[in-house]
Length: 349
Ligand SMILES: NC(=O)c1ccc[n+]([C@@H]2O[C@H](COP(=O)([O-])OP(=O)(O)OC[C@H]3O[C@@H](n4cnc5c(N)ncnc54)[C@H](O)[C@@H]3O)[C@@H](O)[C@H]2O)c1
Image 1 (cartoon, rainbow, N blue to C red):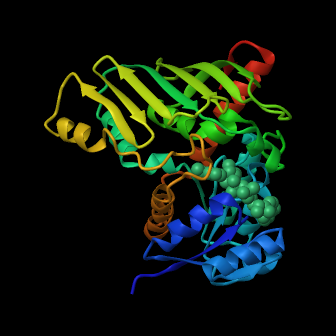
Image 2: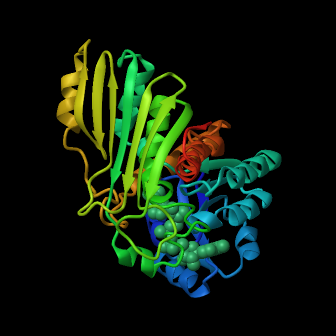
C-alpha cells in the first residue's frame, strides 16, 4: 500500500485552509494535527478538519504521526517554528512565501535544515501551474532566442481594512515589506526563475494609496539579469479594482504573455505543431482571481502540486523543486529593491 504522509500545520489562519484542502486532495497525504499560539484558533481549525489541536509547539512536534510540517505563520514569524520543526527532525518542513523576511533569516533556516538533514521547501505555487512550466520549457529549449526583457506586473488592490484589520500586515517586522514582499513575490519569483540570476537592480518604492502602514504599497524597479537581459518589476496594492498578475517575456525569436494561469500571447519565430493547441487550451485558463483584489481568492491546486512534489522528492531521496535556497532568491532580490529605493542608485547582488 502507498505510504500516507502525515501533515501538521503551524499557524491556522487564512492560507492554512488552502493547505488543508490541498493536503486532503492528495492520495498519499493526510492532515493530522495543527498548532497555533492562539489556542482557540487552533481548536476551531482542528474541529473543522477533524484533526488534533495543540496549544504548544513541543507537544505538536512530538506527535509521531506528523511527518511533514507546513508553516503558515505571519512572514516574519516563519523562522522560529520552522527551526523547531527542523530540530525535531521532521521529514520535511514546507514554509509559505516569503521563506522569511530577510536573506539573513532565510539562511538560518537553510543552514539548520542542512545540519539536521531535513528537507526544507518554500512555496511558490505559480511555478507549478501548467502555463509556467510550458514557458520554462520553451526557455530551456532556447525558443525565445536572446531574451531581451521580462516584465513582472502585480497591480493588485488591497483595501485599507486589509491592513488595519490584521496587525502584522504592512509592518516591516512581520510582513517584511508590502506590495513586493507580500503580494508581488509570486511574479517576482517567476521573473527570476524564467530570467535566471540578477546582477543589479535600481528602484523606487512609495506608499501612495494607504495610511498607517510602514511599508510600500507601490514600487517600480529595473534590473539586469546576469544573462544581460533587462527586467522590470511593477508592484502595487493601490490599483483599484486589481488586475491579474502578468509576466511578459520578450526575445529575439519569440514572446509570451502570462496572465495568472492563462497565456495571453504565445508566438515563436519557429512555430511548432503544438503551438496552436497551446494557444487554444490556455488562452483563457484562469479560474480564480489569483488574489488580485481578494486575498482569499486563491485556488488550492498549486499548493497540492507543491506538496505532491515534496512527497515525491522524499520518496526519491532528492531535493524538492523549490528548496530553501531557491525560495530565498526572491527575498534577496526584493531586499535589494528596498535598499536601492532607500539609498538610491544600483544595488549589486
Ligand atoms: N502562497 C500564497 O499564495 C499565500 C497566500 C496568503 C498568505 N501566504 C503566506 O502565509 C503566511 C500566513 O498568512 P495568512 O494570511 O494565513 O496569515 P493569518 O494572519 O491569517 O494567519 C496566521 C496565523 O498564525 C498564527 N501564529 C502567529 N504566530 C505564530 C506562532 N509563532 N506559532 C504558531 N502560530 C502562530 C496566528 O495566530 C494566525 O492564526 C504569510 O507568510 C503569508 O505571506 C501565502
